[in-house]
Image (cartoon, rainbow, N blue to C red; front, side, top):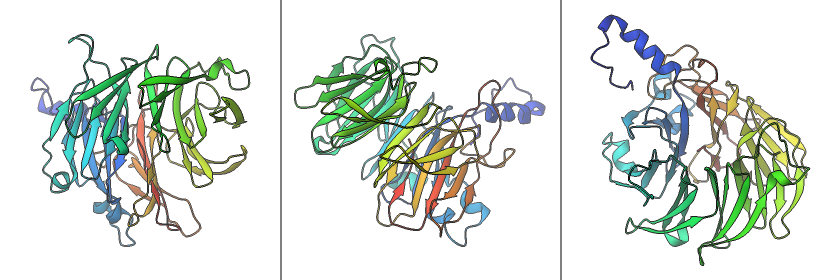
Length: 380
């Protein structure tokens, strides 16, 4: 879907105007529906496009089935992050979170259910919300971003119940320790902080860049991705992608990846990472690179897990390159690419468009599919 063109633009310049919009298009976030059959992708113009994964992955899939089912205007600015509850799609933009009913979205009734804004220090402060995290046991949502705080919202009442202070710069990522009510956060200040949700206090800090084996001063100290599995954490960004033992605050594995990683997740007995470069990397916990799954764009932004039993196995990432999630047919048509993970998989593409952005490339979603197991992966 194209944004409304300014009235001052002559009709003869419409195609140029629309081409410039696509040239600067960025896909910041994506999320898989609760049923595992649909993918939402959000861009820098505040639009969210919905793709049917079940239709696109069908053995009888046609070009039409790879286009967005519906596209709607969600925010005035970029859609930085999205998550889903059993019924709702939650999206974050500049200073606000909105909720949409999946059932209504799929009926092409895209009316927002509610919107909330954290209690910022001044009414003029509108920081971007970079990360959303659901805490199912508390029925709450944690959001973090440009104001250097973690805000907790009660999903039943819609009220903000606490704010966690500690970071000194932008927060980029969040992760939940499911066996204990603890949350990890990573940010521009180079620290991973562990928070106890029972006491609302910081209980552990790991300044990754201060460890010589992890430090890469030429890339900076920022933490752009992290994931946790019980007593283990993996994080990366400016510093090297590293596996940590949380109880001892000890780095145990330094993964031999020079390029900064934008997202990481535990998957079965592997670690998956993505960032600069065309590939999704599959790592052994020992640090051995087991496989690289190539994409069509020069970089990937995010990955996340879709574990719905009825879902096709798929992994979704935001890749560097430009394109419009709601309008197919731009240049090389490579917005969403289906890549094989197993021997019985097949490669496909969902149309959306790709153009090179001046100076720096922007972000596209990349979809990876496999037919081996009923678990799937999607991206933020």
